[in-house]
Length: 368
Image 1: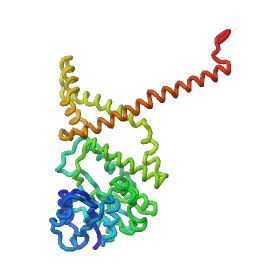
Image 2: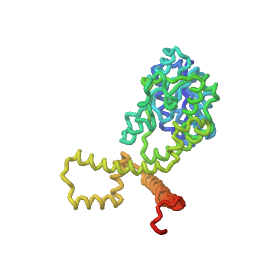
Image 3: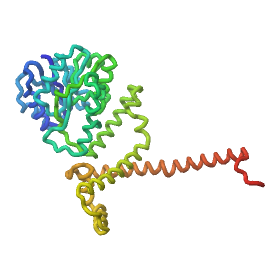
Image 4: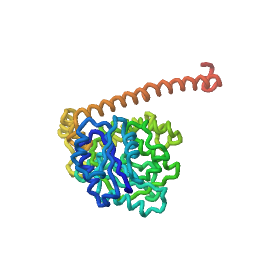
C-alpha cells in the first residue's frame, strides 16, 4: 500500500458516490492505493451512498465523526490511512482516471523526499462555465496561472481538492489546525507550517481532477466572507503573514470604493460590447426610455442577473441578500466619506487658521 486517498465529506451523498466510483476506476494498480472516506456528521444518505459504491473489501474504508469541520475530518483520515503518501481530494471533485497514477509517478521520479505534489483542478466538462466561473479560474479560487516555477510552488497553491504529501510531514507538524472550522485556509496554513520545516511543493498538471461545483457571484461573496474570517485566524497564528493575507488593506473602507468603480466600469463595458457586437445604429430616445423602464421593473433585474452573474437560474433571495449587503456598504461608505471626513477636514481647517492667526499671517491691514 503506497498511497491513501483521503476524502472528507458532508451532505453530498449523490456526488460523493460518483466521486468514489471515479477513484476506484483508476489506471493505477488497485493494490497500490486505498480510499479513506471521513463523514463529518452528514445528515443525508451518505452512509448508504458509500455502501452502494460496492467497493472490494479493503479498498474503501468509511469512518464517521460528529460535525467538526474539514480540518478535523482530514486529521481522522490521516490517522486511519495506511499509505505512506496521503492524497487529498474533495467530495465535489470527480477525478481523471490517471489521477492516482500521476501522483505516484511524481514520487517515483522525485529524488527529493522533501517534495509534495500539487495537481491541477478545473471545472468539470458537464458544467456550463459562466463568465464569472471562468474568472475564478484565473486566481481567486485556483491560482495555477500564477505558478512561475513548477518545481517550487508557493504554499498558497496547496489546494486539498488535489494535492499529496508524505504522511510524515503532516504528522511532524501536528496535522491540520482544527481551529479552522470551514474549508478556508486550513489547507494553506498546514502547508505553511510544513514549508517552514523544509517541504517543497511541485506542480504536476497531468494529475488532474474536475471540480463539480458551479457557483454564482452572490454564493462566492458569501463564501469569501468565511474565507476572510479564516484569514484573520491565520494571521493571528502567523503575524508575519499580514501583508500577503492583505489584512490591513481589506479592513479599510477603500474596498467599497473599488467595488463601485468596478461596477461603474463594468456597466460602461457592457454598453461598449453591446454596440460592437450588434452594430446597431445609435439608440433613439424612445428606445432609451424603454430600456430605463425595463431596468426599473422586476424583469430588468433578470437581464442584469444574466449579464453579471452568468445565469438565469439564480434564486431571488440571493439577489436580495447581495443587494442588502451592497446597500449596507453604501451606507457605511457614505458615513465615512460625507460625515467623518467632512468633520475631520473642518476641524483641521479651523486649527490651521488658528495657528496662522497666532503667527500673524493672513491678517488684514488694520485689524482683524
